[in-house]
Image (cartoon, rainbow, N blue to C red; front, side, top):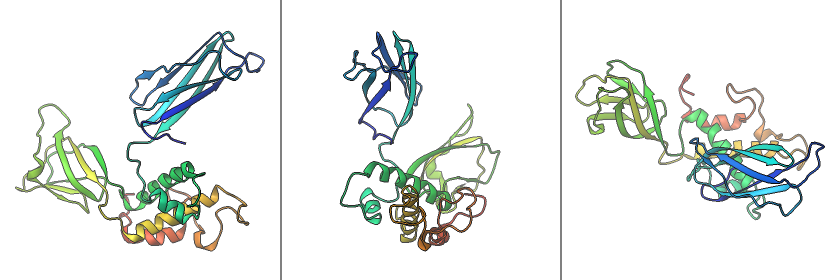
Length: 275
């Protein structure tokens, strides 16, 4: 499961001889490649506390995918792995408490990490249909010539941060001189003039208020995904039950989203071609 930003990731690796037997190495080192391409080399205790099983602790500093490379000598052995770090404010429509209450596991913290993971997956599924729900910054480039309007891709859009040229010598627009239609993402000059690109738009997207039909759809999707991970615990086929049934594959998401959730999300669904 992903780590929270700023927590310590405990990395582990086995060292084996050519025959596959766990053994202590003469030297052991681990290199972590961070999302921005820089590297870190946390200390490794050698020999390890348990024969052939090494560990290193690393305090996370960046969100995103990290790659891990262990190298041993005497015997020569290598081991690779990956781990993810959540951003400081992970995108989730439901709080952990609400998600656990809906799954009827609020009195235990045993599955908290897994619930958080599937809660974030649920958010991505919901936003596939209705656009950004969790408020977030967005930066995107628009390769446009002189045009009357600029259509932001992530809607609803809450506010413009900046509109700047991608190329040297282009025009920077003061956002106070621009009008933003948050629902459609359309940006126009207030004086009626043209916008000359290519342009880089930075803005905030998401919903200041999350409507009940969206949180209700999120709960149903979460319940469905949670049940598919636990076949046989309540009898029947995992993910079964009329309330969460999926009778047809959904374009783009297969059988991940129950039809009942789609019905709840329908009032806020993006127009065709925008999903």
